[in-house]
Length: 310
Length: 282
Image (cartoon, rainbow over all chains, first blue to last red; front, side):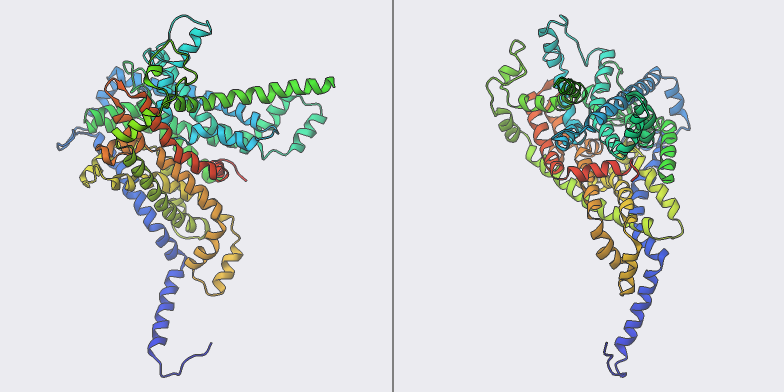
């Protein structure tokens, strides 16, 4: 590179300054924190701050459009004495447990089916994942019509195949309504389990199965001693992940049943919405939402540590 | 020959039968959505007519949907919000993921744990304080309200996914570029990011579907018809009290699902890669 005559001082000094500034930017810590800053600021402002603000709201008697009054733990005491709160707690645990078990079983079955060789496998996989990618509210609307009290296609089919003569009120009966939201949640979640478990299955070398077959292992033995151990880490992560979002589910029960009939399908999230948004009691609503925290934080901490370990 | 026949029977039991069951179970609701949207009301509300097929298809529900509701505005809002939030989340997520994956600096561990934890914090834990914050910022009934809040759901995911991709690029490539005079930023932009295009596509397509799926914040923040998104518009305006406009509801649900489904169909493999990246160690 040809350098200009020595008399040109200005640009040289300027160049020196930019290299120095660039030198600072090139320092690992400075560069890293500059890159992180916008994202971290965003998450602090819209996740961390609302989280702590929610805790402070839960300690106030605070209604929409009026200033809050500090009441200590009064909201939580009121909740603990409210039978509906305990019903909601039970609903949430039933919903999460049953739906998760069904999704594990269904997902495992789906993964084992698609893992076989057949023509159009990729196409089948793409179609089977559709329930998971279509916006939940929109597919739930279709389920509402499938489960409609008067025009349910399930009832029509049951009646016309002569299986039963009565009609079921899928969303009007307490037990059936719980069954319904569990079924729809399972329908939406099975593909998620199925496709992730399939990816896990595909990491298993066929040699392993052949070796086991030569040693005389039966199909069931191969499943228990090869397939399941390999799938275990994937299954743990997928399950914990899905439990977090099933436990705090809002969209599906809100659209399908609105928590009814008579609170039979209210989960923490939908009940918190009714109290905090529809009734405008922000403090009590925040307290209901925070009631999810003990169970959720256990799950979140466990999964965060598990993910970090990898 | 006999062995072949038996093999076929076994293949039927182990493959075609369960596969058929899964396909029907997973796709029936979409079929139902589609045929309901083209049934005339006299078919829809007559329990004596066989409901599994359409006898006289009509397009009245689609015409009414476009004519009598703000459906086009809802679609525009949904797409605008999804595109803006996806781009913002991708940029900020990549900016977070890069140093976390490739440099050592004080505080890296805390930030990484923070990203993983915020990724797992479900919305229902935050929506009540968030509604008050949005009110105080005077952002109610503006698309800015959702554009500001959606990235909080998407940035941690994008960052987490991209960290894995960034880690997979050999350090030597970057070092060679820096010896040739590229700054850290240039090395990231010119060397690492292009190599991670599949990761960016995965994160982008995933963020896009999540943004289209969001409902809770949109329901709370957007209460005027012309700023609503498709899911909120359908639920609040096609169901009025006890009256359900089933034909229009199904037309809205179908049309609302089409953009996601089309984009998904082009990028299935990237979507699946994004879905499995977090859970399958490779």
